[in-house]
Length: 440
Picture 1 (cartoon, one colour):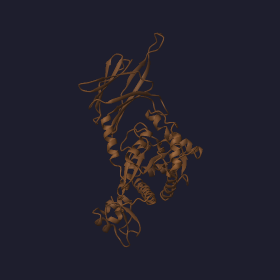
Picture 2 (picture 1 turned 135 degrees about the horizontal axis):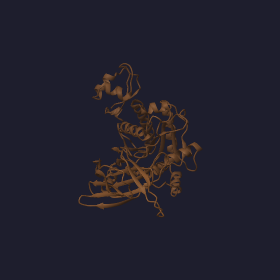
Picture 3 (picture 1 turned 120 degrees about the horizontal axis):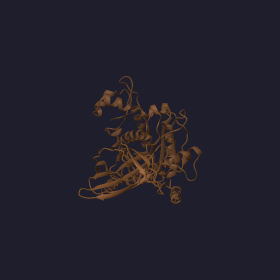
Picture 4 (picture 1 turned 90 degrees about the vertical axis):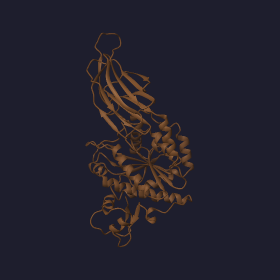
């Protein structure tokens, strides 16, 4: 999935009320970018004030036209922003007349459009958001997810937080949360998919925005047995570091820090232009949670994750915390939110940006997920296939006494270098018996 930004300058005049004869105030339009998802495209136009606009749809060929009204005569050369996804061919930008700058979206086929304004929030300017949706592609995506449901394998849905215009936490060096967690989520998915009897999917596999409730819907479409939301933390104090795990709260937050974190993560919808998800249906969700084991399962898994993470890096808390995280409100499946570290801490940031550390973290999270979900399956009387390490397929390999990397590489029809890179090994061809290796 792609994002592209084009910078251009236009001046938009907001006509003053009352006929005072004053010159119109100028609004600076400074950029335009887009985010492509499998079933929709979002185009965002930035301004330093609320933009006045009108829309119209044209056919033969299909186009969506947006006129930015009351523009001054500051020049803007005709421009074309090539998108080329399944929704939009390109966006053309040109002056229509002395008062209007026109955006023309050349569409692949007619779409359902939604155009709205977002107020300034934190470091975000005023934004004009253009959402272009194809219901046929959305239906196709939903059917594809439902077809993955299975009673013969455990399904894990991994949710890389944020995405699109919602970048999440940002370090002073410009490292962005949305990119770190997507890279980690992809690695974790691949590790889990190397296990027989397991299948992992991502809520988003590109740089685009998904509302929090939609992430839960995606997990339900897949028939998920477990839901893991990945994030990075942030703090004004750059000395604060360490991983933490959060679960949904039955009442209030476990402490003030957990409450504030939940508010920040729940604000993802606000950044994306979705109404804030309130607690209108929380009571029925909590009743279901009390009647099932999902809450206890989530907390138990969270404790196991913290024990595992402690062997890789610092952890901020020794036990899972709880708060009202919107993205964890799926009563039918255990759900956790993992803050993998503080992107605002230089050492945590260095580790989280490292591909080798991401691979280690992905393997560790996948291992603990495999162990816990296997225990759940055994508890529930569900028989899982043997793991690839036992069947000789690619996946995880348990090193035997006096076994070497060369022997293992031949067994799995791969190379020593590939195994070394995948496992971040150092020094020599000798391995310790009992060590687990990921086979790429």
